[in-house]
Each structure stands twice: as C-alpha cells, then as structure tokens.
Length: 265
Image (spheres, rainbow, N blue to C red):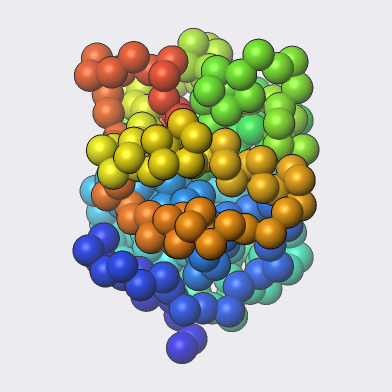
C-alpha cells in the first residue's frame, strides 16, 4: 500500500507498513515492540485532531509521518518538517498528501503568519535551543493560532535523574517548566493535559512488576530478548487504553506525558 491508513481504535491489528529503521529516536508504527509507544503518542493526535479541522497545519518534527498523514485527513493543508534526510524521503514516498519539507526547527523555513496550527509532539525534549524553537512557532503562527505540544513528563519519565534516561533527549520538562517555556515566548496556555494509563493498562502494570513501561525499558537497557508474555501484551495495547485528562481532573505531575494547548495572541 502506498499510504498508511490509520485503523479505528477498536481495530486490534497493527498497521502493516514498511518503516524507517528503529533507532530509539523516533516512534515507528507497525512494529510489535514499538506498539506501546506508538499508541501512547497516537492518542494525543486523535484527541486533538479537531483543532486541525480546515486549518493550515505545520507539524514541526514530523518523524515517520503517520501523525501528519492523520492530520491531513481533516486539515486544509499539512506541512511536515524534519531535519533528517531519510525521514523526509520516507514521508514523501509514503504519505503524498503531506507537503513534506526539510529544515531546521530553530529556523523554521516559513513566512511570518503562515499557518493556523503548529503541532509538535514528542520533539521539544530533543532540541538544544527550546526557547528559540518556541519563538519560531510564535512567528509562523497567525494571530490566535494554536501550538499543540506534547513531551514526556520529566518527573515520571526520568525520576530522580539530572540527565534524561533517553540518550536522544537533551532536556525534559515538568508541567511548570513547560508552561514557563511557552509563556516566555508570548503564548497563553489554554490547557495543560496529561496522558495516563487507563484501567486496562493499570492491569498490565500489575502483571509486569508494577510498570509495563519499566519492563520494556529494562529489556531495552539489558539488550535482552522480549519475554513472550510482555511482547504479547505490548502488541495488544490500543489507543483507548490511555486517558488524556485535564490538570483539574488528575494531578498533572503524575502524568506520563504532558500535552499543552497554547494560543498566540
């Protein structure tokens, strides 16, 4: 198939696609070992998709491209941007409805006020100059434009550490730090949401020593084979196994990932 068609949340099958190499830096759909992370990222795209309806959208740091393609199903135009040559070529070949471009996120190759929405999911933690990037988002957004940003919650992702667990991350943030980063560039933070395990994932946590997340990380750190029961459970995770909740519904510092909705004045 020439493009990746997103299954409905009730469909238990993994997407069958040719993927970029698995490096640990980007999330890849269609791989059983990556399915937990893919679904954990996918839930944010699905729940915030209505913000992109009939809008001109930039996905800054589009990676494999599955998210940009999902957005392209509702937006008037989607620009994908990534620095990596192989990612750019992959998106152009697999997702033709995405206007894929190559460029540096610190100097977005767009005119002032060019887009209605900037999507930046699971990217800010990879950047060295985070403030410069957020300034650039403000520049390319039209007045009242929206920045949708997600990032791992430092408190739960790298607990008690001065440096991130993930070697591809430069600086992780908690909710207060993310809010400060956005407001320093002039954004109004309309909402701060958190991604949490739902009831079925809580059952899988209990089955795998208290955290299915930690069980996967331990296997990766040890470079050990996947236990059959862990792989089966990870491959069966669905998008609706995660909850996306507002900070007034559950303590944001307990979240797995932070999701900010920020508006440019």
